Amino acid sequence: MTAGIALHGGGIAAATLAHLLAGEGVPVFGGETVPSAGPAPVVMLGAQAVALLHDVFQRPLFSAAHRIERRVVCWGGGDPVTVPHRALAISGADLAAALPQPVLAAGGADFAVHAAPPFPDDRLLSFGSRRAGAVAVDLAAGADEHAAVVEATEGGWLFLIPVGNRRAWLLSVGDQVEDQLAASRLRSILTPLRSFSTSTFETAPRMLQTLVGSDFLAIGHHALAFDPICGDGTATAVRAALLAAAVIAGRNEGLDEAALLSHYSSMLVAAMRRHLQVSLPFYRSGGTSPWWQQQADALAQGHAWCTQVLSRAGDPRFVLQGNRLIVREKAA
Image 1 (cartoon, helix red, strand yellow):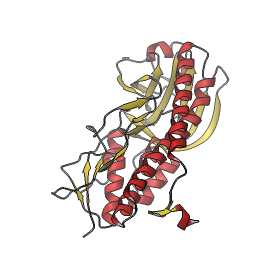
Image 2: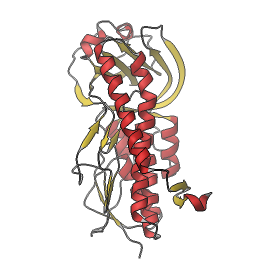
Image 3: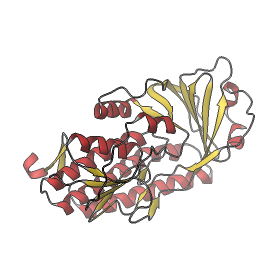
Image 4: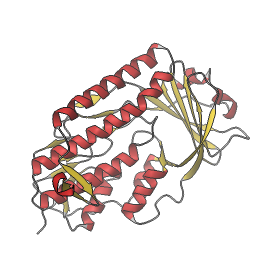
């Protein structure tokens, strides 16, 4: 019988992994898992993330989500620039609920996948520290309901995400939302805020220091989280689940388990390195205040750390082909 795994926690990555393993006939054991929304009250799903999820689950998932067709960028003191942008805005809770949740068998396994705390090793690496607040707002008459707006201010940045019916969420990263709005162009497209009360959460990129062990691997936004400035977190969670499923398949097929787990960890570090590299120019050009400089320096330090880790790991030993990891020499 194919060896199964124990799954701890819910969320996008966990649901994706369980679905993939069920298709392979791999038993998934554990207690009840519940949908696990991310910390932000709203998520913008880019076209790539939507396509990945539809490919995995082979069904439409987000028919009720609000369409975002444009992104307006006000950055570094320059004039606003409007660019086409295909995305869906959906609440974190609705996103988690839209995904089929795994049906878990009773029993145990000698290998576990952790998608939520507590992890075997909870030490977290954070590349910066920037709290965000989120407040529900109303769009003024004439405001574009299908345009997300990103604006840099002296002490951080604002992200307006319309969700339909003239409603939107306003995220403020850095300074308090009321302070950033005081000097923001966004005031002209919002009705006066009734309240500045917000939910708060951390948005700096971060990852577990230990992503794998001899009998486990970690997935999901609790294990690896990206800055929302680049909007690739959901797609990365799905890709990590695809890779984790391939690692588990490789274990069951007799490939070198230590090498598989090392490859998984390296690929997640490489994903973080790419994210930091893409994010850094935004923080270098967003503003000149100490806040912007501190965040840019933290990203650069994180990029250097990832580079060192990857240099010690050496060249990848596997390549992902379809839903299997193939030893690189054989794939060449």
